[in-house]
Amino acid sequence: RLVIESPPQVKELTTDTALLERVLANMLVNAFEATNAGGCVRLRMDSSMSSITFAVQNAGSIPPLVASRIFRRHFTTKQGIGRGQGTYAMRLLGETLLQGKVGFSSDLDLGTEFYVELPLTPDRNRRSMMPKR
Image 1 (tube, helix red, strand yellow):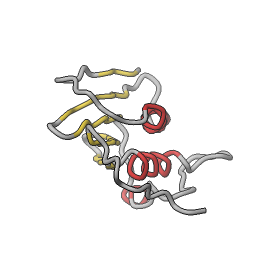
Image 2: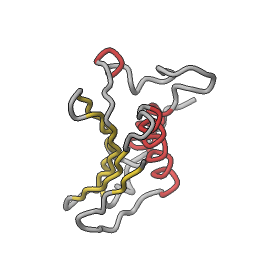
Image 3: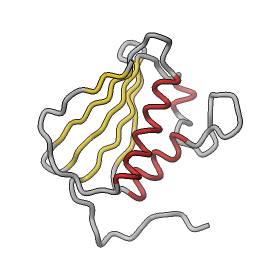
């Protein structure tokens, strides 16, 4: 079950919507995969004077050994081909291209929450930090 919490105050955000949707989709997929049948995933938005934060929360917790490697490329706790890109992509897209901050917190009692905090207006003069191939 997905619960979308209404934002306290709507602000205008200048960003690449396709990239933001990809980050949020990765957060939601991970949360649903970590949620037992009948469980709940929450999506919320908070805003400040200079940024908007999107957060996805579920009841599960991430063990410390996994948490320390969560944003590494190709790291996964799941079986199957094509895994291990979700959290890496969240951070790459959210921080490098959208100029935000991506992180998470996890606690046995509070569950796990991933977030992306984006500036209301990105710095148009900032050069891309994309890694060279």
